[in-house]
Image (cartoon, rainbow, N blue to C red; front, side, top):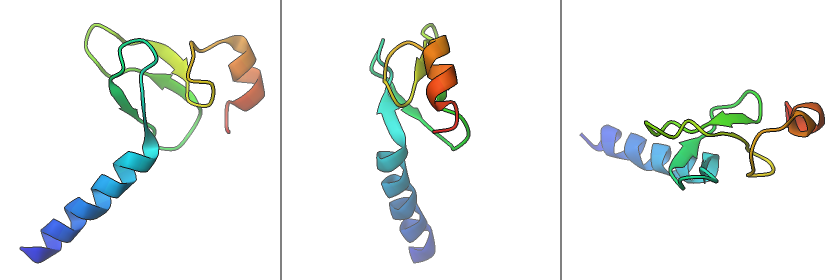
Length: 68
């Protein structure tokens, strides 16, 4: 129904705002709140990276912006 269509539109907007490409393989990775430590969801990648820096996760990232 139309309610479902509206829900899809709303979720598409959310995805645009809260995804960034994995720095290693460019797969869109969604951030669902919580810390800035991202792990790529693509099978065979699993790259750990920082949402803020968009580079490999480091201890500096952990100290500087774990929670944004």
